[in-house]
Structures are given as C-alpha cells and as structure tokens.
Image 1 (tube, protein in one colour):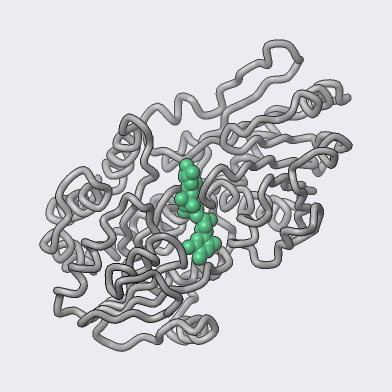
Image 2 (cartoon, rainbow, N blue to C red):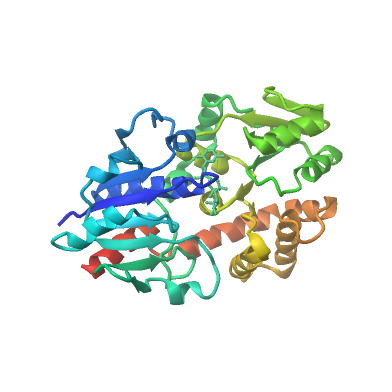
Length: 378
Ligand code: TRH
C-alpha cells in the first residue's frame, strides 16, 4: 500500500531546513511514488532555492509534491496523512495531533533530526517518545554517516550524474548561468559561509598569493562583505578583482544547479547541513563552515566529523585539513600558510574524497531508510 506523507517544515533562519525537506519530499514522490504534502511556513525563502515556487500561492504542485503554506485555516481542514514528519523539532498544532490520534490507523509520527557524526547518534536513532496524553508515539530519526544511523540524502542518480559531468557539461553549465569560464592555471572556489567566518582574511590571502583564483559567492552577507573589503561599499557589480583574484557574485541557484556549481569547482567552502553533504557527494576538497551554537556545542560536532572523515588520511593531509577547518571556524589561527598547505594537498584530497564517497555509498540513502523505518512501524 502506498502511504500518504505529510512533511512539516518551519524556516527559522537560513535555508537548510527547507533544503532538506524539499529534497526528501521530491525523492519520496519521484523514487518511492509516495503521495506527499510539504507544509512550509515561509514560501519566500523556499522560492530562493526552488525558483518555480510561487510565494503568493498557498497551494501548488511541483515535482509531484503538493506544497502548502503552513498556516490556518488550510491546516485546520486537512486530514492527517498516514505518515507525519516533523522536521527538526517543529511543532504540530494540538488539533492536528488530535486528528492523527483518532485516525483508524494512527499516523506514524517521526521527528527528523539534525545531522551529526557524534558517537551517541546510533544509540538515539529510532528511539520512541510516547505522547503524554494521546495514543501516539513519536520516533526520532537521525541522519548520519554510520550504518546504524538514518544515512544521508542521496538521490538515486546523483553519483552517476556527477560522474558523467564532464568538461563539456561543465562548459554548458557555466555558459547557461553566465559564470566565468575556466582558464587553465586558476583555482575555482565556491564560498557559502556564515558571518562568523574570516572572509576578509581569506580574500587577503587570495590577493597576496601568486595563484590565480576565481571565487564564486552567492548574493548575501558574505558577498556584501567582500565587495566592501575590496571596493569600499556593498554594490551590485557581479565581478570584483584584486591582483590574481576574481570574485563573481551570483544570484542563488536552484538546488540541482548549486550541486553542479560544486561539481565544477576545485574547492568548495560550504556550511550548515545540506550544502555540507552535497560537497561530500561532489568529492572535491571542501571546507565546512559549521553552524555556530551557544556554549560552543558545535565543536563536538565538528571534531566528531573530522575524526571520521580524516581517519584514513595520511598524517600530513589530516593535519592540514584539521588546521584549516578549525582556523576557518574561529577556534585557531587562520593564515596564509594554513591555506597554502591545504591547497598543495588538493590531489591527495581528491583521491581521499572519492574513497570517502565510496565508504558513504555502502549506506542506504536517508529516504530509502526512512521509508523502510516507517514500514517497520506499521
Ligand atoms: O542555510 P544553511 O545555513 O542552513 C542551516 C543548516 O540547516 C543548519 O543545520 C541549521 O541549524 C541552520 O541552517 C539554522 O545551510 P545549508 O544546510 O547548507 O542549507 C542551504 C541550502 O540552500 C541547501 O539546500 C543548498 C541551498 N542552496 C541553493 O539551492 N542554491 C544556492 O545558490 C545556494 C548558495 C544554496
């Protein structure tokens, strides 16, 4: 039986929550033929990563998914689906939960959690939490990098598409988006980070280096900071220059196109959760800007990932990656030598990242795991 699914997502800040939910919803519809409603409280943010989304329409169907603006009275009239996903601890209304409980077969209720490589994740993955009053049990589903977790989002054709993305496809992609085309000696880098990252320092390093660099930055605060640093003001010029550095600021791409940008670059600086995972699938050297949490809780998360990811690296490569990632995230110094050491190891990092992808491919993808997990509850 093909069960119906409701996915609930609040956009608190940033784009990772809707980014993950949108991928999950599309994959459930396209690859698992589920009937999916995606409830989102902010269609304007959603439209930034999915350009077909019309923020004025409270209900629309895209890529086989019914998208609803999550607000009253639409939700008040909705009959809960067979499977209900609360993404990242967003809270369902009491009315809706009441209706989940009185269904002939009570809905399977899942909280999709944030991604972490920490060692406690496999123990918590799948744990139940009974509702204090209603006959409903919520289960916690944890994404992760180890087989005992929920896995990572990965569409079934993603890796084959990435492997087929050759020089010609890259050129077509670059031309389509008016990105600067590749010249032989340069390093091409994408930069998507938080305000806490030492962006000006990075730009200074590029300006001082003899290596030509082309830096691609999405419109937003980091791009503004770069244009102020290089030009004294935030402006709408799309190209900025400083010695061997050229910066191209671009309007946000659709998710699938952002993937292609990651495939086309030589180094990717990513952030949060979803772009961090996509950089891993891209298999190019990457640097993770971790989402800063209060009381430094993110350091455990960063170290746990580094432990896993660098475990099979040569010691020199491991040291270079750790120095760069901790420096970039503000724990240690971030300087010219640290950057240069990392760049010098690009070839071995490429090899390592291909092996890392092979290791991750031994896990099922998150959506298939979630479908199976749900079936096991019924
Ligand atoms: O936007 P983020 O910082 O989101 C984060 C994380 O989800 C984090 O876990 C959460 O705690 C915090 O927000 C509040 O970074 P992330 O996760 O990489 O999400 C960005 C999304 O935007 C991702 O789906 C990729 C997408 N994107 C595009 O589709 N096009 C673009 O041009 C760019 C730059 C990003």
